[in-house]
Length: 357
Image (cartoon, rainbow, N blue to C red; front, top):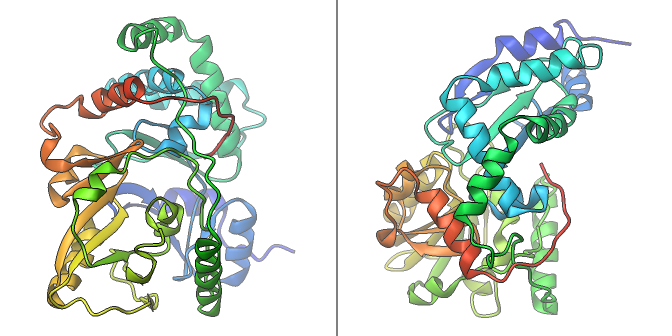
């Protein structure tokens, strides 16, 4: 039985907007449970604020460790990124995708997609799709790149940029979590389930250069759920486990509860604020909150997607290294590519087979 009053194509095409995080996207607001059920079965995400958003893929990224290694080879990833970047600059990416869809027109019948755009997406390319076929499109895009006449050109270009003695895989760690950390994560899971959040704390498997953290003098850490659970394992340890506070903040200003876990006194405290860095709006809201509480914020942005937001933070995690922003040349439009190459040359890289969206 189908209670859908609107066709999924209409929902997808009629709800494009410039979302709160400074990039284009699709958000469909509905309280119709049958619609939500139907769309979730098509791969859409329910946001618990009477809205759903379509499945999204990252086809290439040169900042986020997990995204970089989705093709198992950092050299290939950079070549692919440069290829896609050139297509976007020449307004040819849309035609490149349409040609793929036309070749498999039966499979992709009534399939619609949207290439996310905006000033914050400098080092990442994302596409939203009408349904789960977007994941097949991701694979088809890679295959088409490999068959393209420009493929060898970009591979050779990257070979000339990356010396023969450089490595092509991200460095991994095999450290076991201590019992204290495991119990802490179990406690967080129980707290979140009590407020109807099913969190997924992701064990950090990458070797992250955190030496810069030793130069940061702080009294407390403020993390922003739910995104923080993807990278919390990079930062939590025996010495700071009691100093971590969680506060839910949303840049769209929609009241979703704004839950707090482990409320700390921030007055006259130096607070290390850690959050994903997209538009920087959430960071700014959290910074203001810390200041209103009498604290001094120190901002560490995770995987900034553009150079333009670096001036909002003091430190940044880029690839597998934490940088003092003052030492970065953000005026250089090739900054992320140069940091990418720098990390490849400095790291010991190990083979890793993993695929992720």
